[in-house]
Image (cartoon, rainbow, N blue to C red; front, side, top):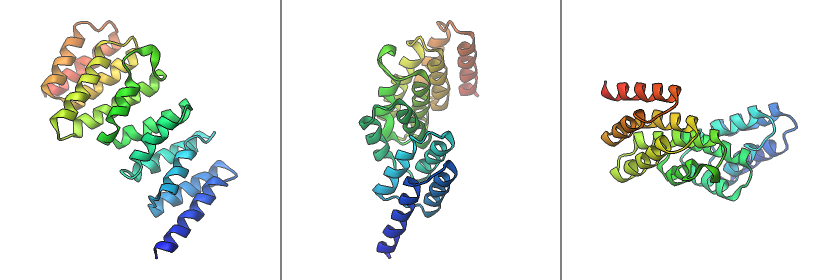
Length: 209
């Protein structure tokens, strides 16, 4: 039975890798989703599909990689570090952010950055900040939550990227610890952007409810 499963998964991988159109690729990805195979080769094929030129294919691959978690988390992190393709990295961060596994917290912190000039394009950093919010709001151990809040506090108070500050405010609202609340109050007093300031105000109101 295990041999049959392996053969079937290989057929699905072959269908995905040799797909002649976006529709064929999506059909193969859908079949993988239905089968729920989590072999390394299957996950690798899905990660490779993230680089497909058609956005609907990469979107379908993200969806299935999220569905097959946690088996996909470590391969996604490894693929991020082994790639220099910012498009692929962006899709990987998107998938990991939706999964929200604490294993990815160090990667998210790395992507959010310590200096704006040294890290990925803004949208990827914002997605990573939202990933930290999901981890921080679902984590059970105080150490993980503390580290996440510290990184989000930096992201809220320091960068010039208003979108990153906005994402950090939303994530701190989700976490809703006293430390997150204090960070939002501190940010409200110094935030220059009207849109971000409004979102911080909403976050504080939600935490107090």
